[in-house]
Image (tube, rainbow, N blue to C red; front, top):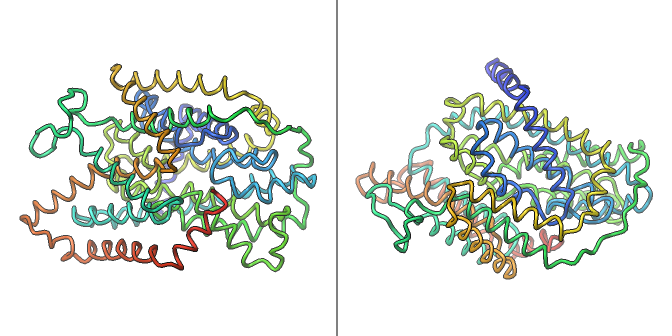
Length: 501
């Protein structure tokens, strides 16, 4: 009954004219950046962070969330029609979705992707509403030692479950932790690692790093690409799957939803891992695995459902524990701190309108995305004809204005440009920026809880292993490290992401 009352509160907040407008704007932008290859939700949210300064907290977070799960919808459109995945998690969609389009079933493929995404998103939102309150109650029992151990587990989980080189990911997280230490020490009030630069005494602004590493660097990377466009066709065809396609897609949709919902909660899981894992699962359990890659509806429905379910359940650790599981939720934490909202279990009690309004907006957003992705599919395809040489300079100008508006300081623009150049070099070296962002967000929180735990324990380091919950979290973290170094697990991990490379 209490959850029902809370949901009513959430819908009363989410259905206000202002919040519906921002939800629609977020879904629209998410679909747009999902359709356009080479942008993605992380750079877009990083670019839009300065806008949240002038928006109410609820409206800002609803818009950013809409961009994230909207990108999962939009990414499938071009993946199906022209074999260009607009979003990383849509890479798997190309395998069978584009083959269905080549077989004259483009409309059916788009409908399967959209309806599977809608069903998965709605189910994941139900999980979020049902499981978030108990988890938040459990989180209130966490002390500083438990929070420190949980953040260690989160960082290790993000490295283990993410694609790419493990040593490079570890180095990026350590660099993020070091960057988080720049500024004035909270306890002593002494400036540290600021190189006598006054602008660094308050630390490096989170938005500056995010926009540099993801915004500016992404622009430089994409400007290297030539405008190679696939010949587009407006012949989408009938937007309904036949009965045979529905029978093959429905079970895969259910399995993908369940798998994506579970993996989305894990640190580092997210939409990309879920889509690859779902495709692998469907191919293994299929009686006709040879049909995969040739236009099998199950090979489309499973991954599409999984990535959308994961995109929404990834908000569970963010809203209940204040721990980001991926780069997008790390950016969401940045947006919350902009409004002096401390991420964690207290959000549910101190800001119930934000907590439940965000959850309710996800149902509204999923309905909006069905309208945006099926009837307007012709519009999204036409956007692929926009040349990059026109698109990216406009984004660069928008980023620069956004950075300057943070503190009205030119130094921030130079810092963003520097991080953009470094981010471009990291992309060349195949070093992911997401672990750096997680380290930057969690670093100050880890340090604060580490020092607070030692203060309460009178300097006794054994407090991290003498408390059962803290010890359990550290053991799980160690087990993850051990497991991922085993040759069989390491090989399987590489095989899972081989298609992404």
